[in-house]
Image (cartoon, rainbow, N blue to C red; front, side, top):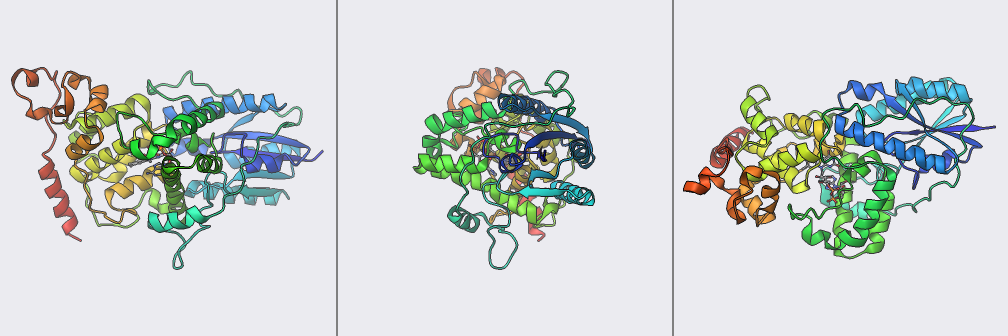
Length: 457
Ligand SMILES: Cc1cc2nc3c(=O)[nH]c(=O)nc-3n(C[C@H](O)[C@H](O)[C@H](O)COP(=O)(O)OP(=O)(O)OC[C@H]3O[C@@H](n4cnc5c(N)ncnc54)[C@H](O)[C@@H]3O)c2cc1C
């Protein structure tokens, strides 16, 4: 009997899964997930993502059981564990998805070497975690695009492969040992409003989004209180949804909403092709501006106020409290809080990126680090010195103040847009603010500091 192993990583699904489909060509398949101690050692395994991951693994296991199989879970060094399973089952080949981080590249190289030493083959499949393969579209003079618009032009013309169906049956060889599936219980520090993981939940959300949400996306995606984006980001991060399937299905819906949505999904591929070509951008400036940022230590009080949602700027505080409560934030909120930390408070983007990764359920090296760099002006933004004014932005994207009132209870009694500038309230109205703080810094002061810093260039 010939056996293949499929190693699941950030692709925890059965639908549209090229490595699984290829592995199913063998007479038997070992669907394997390794709780990789290397990931734990990097500190990347934050409680919110571990909880979502536990949901995903449980759901993957039940999907496999419906098809006659089951999920095999092991813990340890990913290369050692795969090699052990290969030896136990005498498998000929291992199939897995390509990925973009320096860690993923190293994992792939080590695994290939170890398997080849044993006379086995590793097959790495592309278009599993991205719609378009990183590096498949490039400008004439470079190995990657540094600007989104020309990237998107080529990306949009790239023919995507057809969506693959889930396999009908998965036959797992007898006697392969598995650990218990991880559970949410025992995890502490979870966000109260954390989303549920798993492919079934991802597919349900996607169907509902394409039916009821996407048509209005172009008009409503920046409406902070309306919550009118897909919230599919954790499913894309864990791969419970396939980006190829997502784009294929959105394109079938068509119209301006679907087009704007597909364009946003292309941003995800864009950042992935940057990181694949420049893995150091996870921690180092992509295009340095020679900033001498304030560190977490030197700006301790400001950073604490930012993290706790007590900066005195209501829209910033609402956003940071949403992050803590849900492990997720609206895109406009992420832009505003990142601009505020890097540009108004002039704190190192890595401080903010690290804090986001502690909480975000969709926390993702490519998307998080490169969006932070975009907003810090050290990344791919063609206007690196832009500063988002939290008051003007709040009045535009939360015109009635409903987003702020939802997340900042101290301000729940303030009507209308005046909630965005509580320091202007007088007398009893001001006294009723229940301890809500004054601004940590004047916007004009923050702006002047940032301009001085960047004028050094
Ligand atoms: C400072 C900062 C940090 C961020 N960190 C992350 C992160 O860790 N993980 C993450 O998935 N996204 C991150 N984003 C991008 C974006 O904010 C989220 O993807 C989006 O808010 C998720 O909500 P949604 O699924 O409802 O998005 P929708 O608006 O419905 O968009 C659909 C999908 O497109 C992709 N997408 C949307 N906007 C972007 C973008 N700007 N860059 C890349 N992909 C995008 C996401 O996969 C998203 O799920 C960050 C943005 C900023 C400014």
